[in-house]
Image (cartoon, rainbow over all chains, first blue to last red; front, side, top):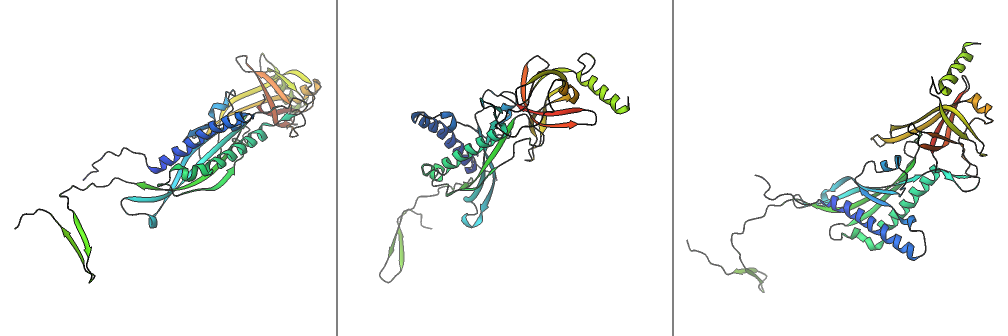
Length: 224
Length: 126
């Protein structure tokens, strides 16, 4: 016995991951537009969004012409809740998604007799993007990530900021990652056997005064 | 001349002789903007770093090695990493092998007072 239909769909964890990335991409553009309208520097609301990239800061190593902060959305793992699921059709899962924000800083003169340290600049960038991400994800406009009906909970379980990448090996470029850990509860569905229709039957169910329940149906049959 | 002084002289030849050694023109600038052109060993290479995520990632390591006596002769002290942002950091500028100039900030240094050289670890400077 084999599954009759081609499995040609995304699972919910993929839909949720892509939805998170889409929301962030939409909002960085929208926030930049709002910043321009408000007479502010739109670059402070600008970040690039990727999904499932393990090394997105590679582009900064040898080319520092574009230092736009990077956000990467990745699916980490999921736990399935047996009590809230059924055995065959629908399984409820809580997936963990990592939204990693990378800030980069290059040391430079402050225009006077001092300097702007790259390690601090990178950390401040990582904090700034983490702040934007948290506000966007928990904005009421994006309740349930816009996937109400499938997603039943969106919860930021942790935020953290790491030491600069390569710290201890003295990388020439100061890159600081920060991470927002998002737990999302959603349903996963699996292929089902579609039963073959033998005959359509219409029935009427009545309850009589003595409490008995009577079903009546009208259908053709061949007497034995 | 003792063995230690011979070692220092040999090291100076290796680091600063640009004909028979690894000597390479390097401009060193101190926090008060005093610059000196000198010879030393420069290094700018890719490396793999372990960010402790279970996956090695690309990195880049740059450093220069200078003789402490040559720094003194140029009127400079021993470079150090400058934490205080109200001061300028030590900076070094040198060409790569293709003649493209790069300027770096000195982040930390490892002076070797036994044979008289100092290794300066570098960070990009804009």
